[in-house]
Image (cartoon, rainbow, N blue to C red; front, side):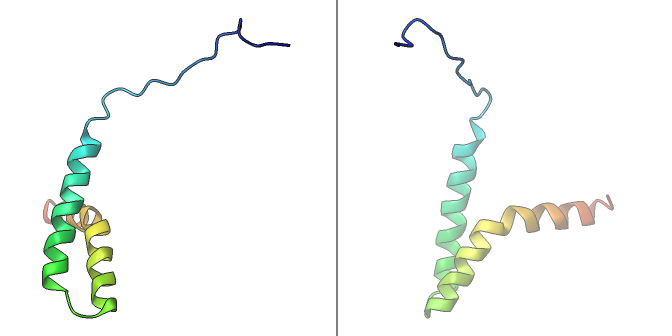
Length: 68
């Protein structure tokens, strides 16, 4: 049997434009941390780790400064 007559629901995501901004932030911090931590393989992994998790550290210390 053919299912050409049935309609399937499609998920539509709206207000998702901040992903590109976060990606640009990731690329920028990765570039910065690679410049600072260049040398060995392990230092490059540290730079990658910092570039991935910097928003969490930023949020944590911002909340800490605001006494939340």
